[in-house]
Length: 204
Image (cartoon, rainbow, N blue to C red; front, side, top):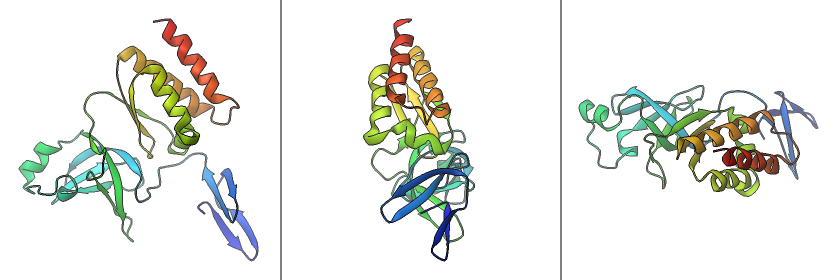
């Protein structure tokens, strides 16, 4: 897996992080660092501007994403005027990583189910390495938060989270997510977060 290398019969960590050991598989999950794109990841991107045939998109990685016009709408008119009008700079989009070229160009797509422009709402950034803990086993953590705050919450694997709902409930969700980011190794974290959410909600 990632974050390790082999010398002879021994495997060493190449980065500082958390050990993930399974049968016939080992990797080290970095504690901090930029998002590393993988094909089929869902990411929340911010449009920087247009390219010749599409858009340059900040996906919170070492390399920006490239969204081609036909990965947005199959029959898209590629004139620059239409590109800017369709996705002006600053637009927030939910997309998937379609391809990573040998030269590290990251091509993203909005053709997959669920991909769309995210309008309004609130955008939150956390360390991408903490996203698995925020989601939880079988989505247990994020499902609990959504249920308790009755908000729409979309989690990008690149460390960006989009929230939409009543402002006071969104603020409670944001606080809960920030606590999770700082306490990923805490035992009983899901129950702890649920208690905090209920206490904050009852104060409204």
